[in-house]
Amino acid sequence: MKRQLILISLTLLSLIASARPQTRSVVIDTVCQAPIMRMLHVVDSFYYQFQACPDSLFYWAYLGLDDPNPEAQKTKESREAIQLRYNERVYDPINEIGDVGLDIYVLGVRWWKDQHLVTQHLFTASQPHNILVSRLEAKYSGTILESGNMVVCMAPISYNQTRIHYEFSLTFGRVLSAFISDKTWQNAIEWRFETILENLVECAETGTVQPKFRGPKKSN
Image (cartoon, rainbow, N blue to C red; front, side, top):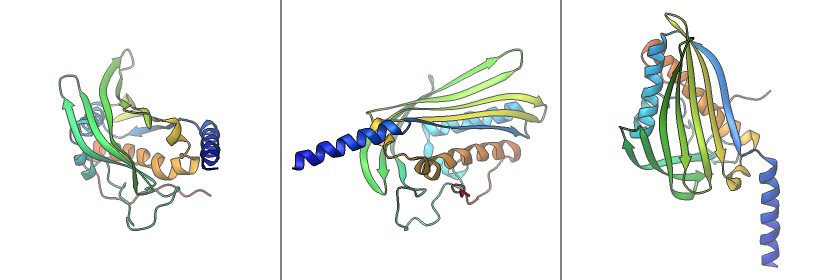
């Protein structure tokens, strides 16, 4: 009987996983009121700190991501349904490759320990439109998460304006993808990467990022 229940559970999980996409993305087009090289400097600073000293990002790029009520009970659709907690980091400054160790928490419980996120910063420039592309490619150990990419394409509109095309994509492993409904993605993950871009643009435009409250947008 117990074996039958396990087989039924695995079958249901596989059916749910096949019905939900493994790769999800955030795509945003916007305009920054700052020169292109200033925006590039902010983006590259974000990538460097993410790889070498991610704790420093909580002072600027991650402002607005904190849970205003950390003691509240977590549900599958709460903003803290999934958490990644850093525990170690190694950075190769010559090749711009970072290796961050992390634990993955689901609903406040550690499901996976000592996962590794290996990232590489890549940069390209194309003519004749002076488009600059700064990207961070990530690969995860194990099968819980597979890969991730963050790409910021920048093109000058004028001396003090930059057009930005921003893409963030994350590919979950088949097991975790079964947990990621559209609602969970919107409430726990999507809005965070929208906020990060807002903070990067604000830093380029003003030289700083003001504390703010941010959360998933309310659906009508």
